[in-house]
Length: 234
Length: 381
Image 1 (cartoon, each protein chain N blue to C red):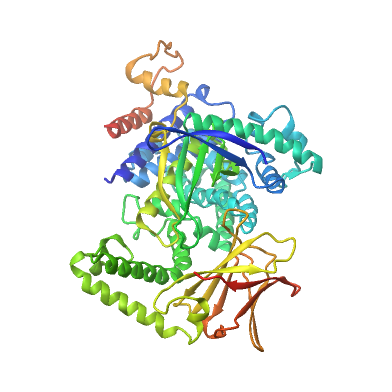
Image 2 (image 1 turned 180 degrees about the horizontal axis):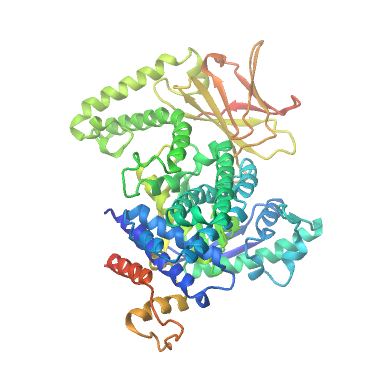
């Protein structure tokens, strides 16, 4: 299996390099491929080259997508997807844009290993456990902006697990979650044009942007939501 | 307002502001986002804001929007829920999650989304009450969306163990809703909490006992009390002044545990008589074609059973719900008993009274044809 050298930031601010393996086996990768890459709701075509998704996957209307490639295709599919995931992983770790946690191993040894959720710049969520990527997927439950949706999902999940770890629930196997970087995980990310649309109504054009002539009137709803949001920012 | 609740309210307001901007200014949207998607996100974040803050003002403003706009908003939400085919996708993932631990991470999305569906449908019916009464098209979409919701419910209930295992995020969020969660019994998360409680019940006692025994050991070794560390202890015992009551409670638990033990069992398991332990079972004579695994055995005194669970060593000790393992056969001399291994969670329960005394206890894992996959031997704690 392909490995990738990923640079991570540690809690004390220093950087460490770790080798991460991509998937357990070709078999487990193909299962993931059929489920995620072939899922029309997941925007893999944005990050994979050319028409590879159409080539690997058979889509029948009303049916779940299936893998149609040959044995030989598996290896080439793995090589292509692994390369893209490696790039997303390196980018997410370098940004940094990931959440790390310690997971206790079964038994009484009290050994623990690190798990991480990475958020790629495309909105791809990569799950790694014990230095191995076990899954990579886009949140596809409802079509939405993959990046913001993935941010919200990972944030809620990590908040919940941290709280559970603090309560020491019987099934809790994870310790506290560490956010890298903290600033990125503190507030939902906004696309530049949206942020401008929201903020220029408060204080005029920002960063030299030209005020949009189409926004003639701000609705009562927007004014109200903005007022509530501002009161929460303090 | 607690920090977490304030944080949730603030985050939903930021997202709501963004989706209101998308709704009112379609030019700002990414190309892939359609009207229905924006309607769903807008009502979802408006609903979550109300849920955590108790403030209905945003929903009331949405209610004042024109009939046509509300028709687009709520109709879009219902249409999206019907098209999303959540139940089918959740079922496919649930089946895979039974044999692949990593799929559990993905299945969790559906437990989380079920809660979102609950919120968005409530908000849509609140905001679009008038629309539902007057627009036949939206009304029929509403019924289709409710059917999709019920279909997802059926899947989550069918795989209730899996659902409960991945309920953490939703139950955490439920703790922070604006009113007393116990009185908010209309939320779907109440059903989820029941599933989780059913799942945890057999483990609760074992966990408390383990913590209490650890506590006793710490106290003995340090000569101090750190009773406040363990939230599993009764409230009265949490205070450091109540060391005596902690000890009494521990003694009571240990007595209860000892009383159900069978003579001869403890030496066979290699544990001291006053401790609850997790035992490692080492596989021998592993047949070809099967990955290496480790079995752990725990005495569950409340269920009166020895619970054996299988973990895959090749997958970094992931829990192994392996369909290839059909039964566990326990032999002692001429006696032989067969216990089915749950293909869903890879767990087998052996009644304590049925486990033969030591020595000579022998366990075999067999496939569905009765072929021996391997022999298990206690390898000590």
